[in-house]
Image: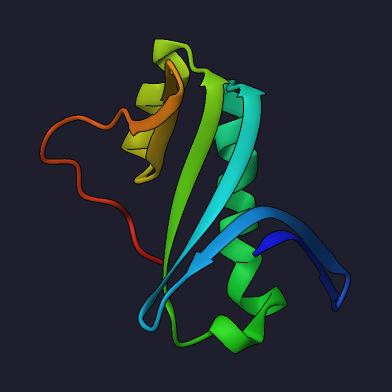
Length: 106
């Protein structure tokens, strides 16, 4: 699902991409260039996601950041926060997380 928006009880959020299967949902923020502040904003969005989208209350929620340009400091910050980091490699999108990375679940 793309470009989801919700408003409830004075809170609002816009989600770039939501990937859902029977057990999990991944909230993806898409940027052309990732900054550490973008990671923090995405974490806030994820924190209120289940309140704003109650149909996913029982779903295991994961987070990801995707960008064309990802400075090392922003990538490491996102990974430390438990987010998947998705970057560009030629025509492909690739995960940039360290081996053994364990995502945070909400």
